[in-house]
Image (cartoon, rainbow, N blue to C red):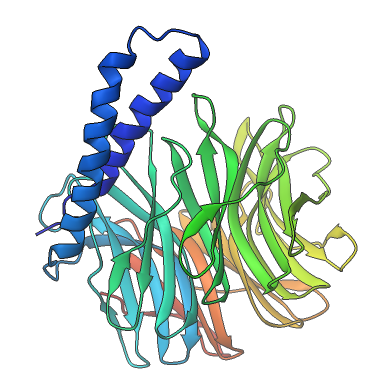
Length: 409
């Protein structure tokens, strides 16, 4: 049995509140008597729903046809992969998915679910075995607007944690933890109606999540992932479009505020950052792709390095001129041991894995996949990559001799 959906109530209340606000700005108070009772009743309902959710017990139902979107490695025998799959009780719905590696095998672990929503978990990170975060979004079927979903593993079970819902349409795509009371999550939000085209950053202080003030680059902007060096050294990356061509976006937290950091744009193509990994204050990598919007297959890998002073482009190989090359993720063990993972197309979708040895990037063969979405490293001979193979999840592992597919539920 699923729990009642608290996000639907929040969504309905946000819709009404926004309309009241718009009418207030227009000095049109004719409808205030109509909306005021509804807001009061909906607020009371949301409190009742929260209590109801806390009181209900969840049956251990897990989804099928899973796509894994994120992986985080705590140790060699403690790795989490999260994503989404088809509701085993209702094929029209999508539920969050949690898979765990115990050193011997991957198993599905039940998590919290809402009532009738499309739920997606996009990012994860861990402080320790009993402190793991997963972030994403939940929305009604056939509707564009989405609400943030956050779940937390306490060592025994996954449970919902309230997010700061700053808009009727907001999502989180990435999360990174410094400590139990210092966690960052990034994504995007809708501002003033229209599409979800403004960056969003939220922070966990040990007791609640709250949105923080960030720069507003020109044009549409989106943050995809975040990486931490220390409590006063955090990076968030994505893309923005000051004109017709999108460019990589980088923001930095110095312990006091977030700031926009310039990144070199591709001379001719649009480009984006999809992930970032931080080894030290002067050793940060961001990866993504550069592409021609008019020729979808003309996509190239992007790798850039922060040396403590500026972002610099670093050459990375491609499989062919029109093979739709691109990176989805990057993970690091040491300054001379870094992996970038993504996909390319050559008679079907293929896995693209490249390795940095301290001097250059090189392509390392890997089994095919439809979409590789994330990677996490435990050691030089223990690296995980997760994704999707049309109707099921795919998990690949590097053991210092080669990449291989590991059975997943």
